[in-house]
Amino acid sequence: MIKKPPIRRRVPPSDRGVLHSIKEIAAYMGFGPKTITRYYKQLGLPLAKTPTGLWITTKTLLDEWLLGLSLEQRSAA
Image (cartoon, rainbow, N blue to C red):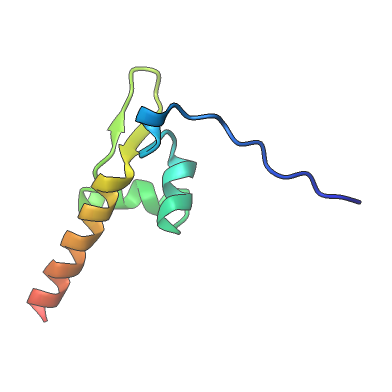
């Protein structure tokens, strides 16, 4: 049986760096959805909730947050 490739949503060029759900954010960061929500609550992961209830963020914000977290851990050692 041939496996179909996943359907990819067409994203406008201006939105390419925006992640539109906890699942997308988790996949980008390599964590599970529960870890993402825990990091948001406990560590200040930069997420925003839309009026429709979706969680959104940008890849740039996540990358900067991870870099800042890494630098904090290095300076504490």
